[in-house]
Length: 137
Image (tube, rainbow, N blue to C red; front, side, top):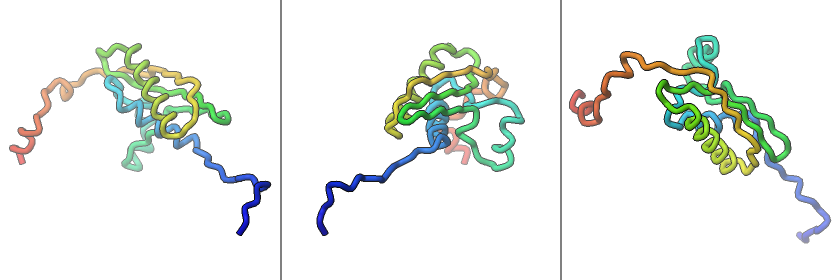
């Protein structure tokens, strides 16, 4: 078999917008102060309730132009957190994760704070340590 230098490599890799949205959702949900990624409320969570699994791409819009990406993401933050710091951390984490995992250039990450989660009685109770949990078993 001889090599033909006139033949172009026509292989390609295309990353779907949903994959980019999932990467975005996971990266954002790992940020301290982020309570929820996406829209809040029962209507927004119906697929999660029915399917029994979390949808990491809801409330995220991806605009893909060749090798550049613009990301719009809605988040809910925990009450008492510094919202500009949380938003900035989300932007940095999303940009880093998407660029490292896809090789695409993230032009912008637009964060919309869609809600705030208030503390409930369960949130105020101190959680058990791992040792206390093991002793309870």
